[in-house]
Image (cartoon, rainbow, N blue to C red; front, side):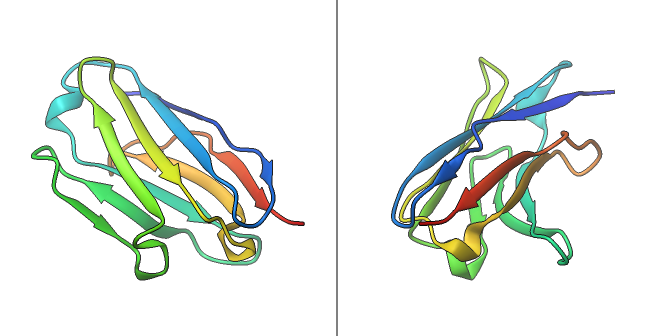
Length: 111
């Protein structure tokens, strides 16, 4: 069973940037579709960005043009570059391979 571990969350001002990382253990990382989800207080967990094994990507409408998902198959790391952050982006961010979940990393956007 793969283990996923996120990092990079922080408190940032509106308009700021963060890069989240997710290190995946286990073999065959390159064969797994991966995604970033987030969950804000009182809300359900929602899909933010997805990257397939062929590097095809998809995004939640509200983050298109601001967030970029990428993967380094050699290092077994999934990234989420987040630019022009807004208070509405405040949440705990999780990475997943649709079977396993990380523990999450908190992102807070506030002046």
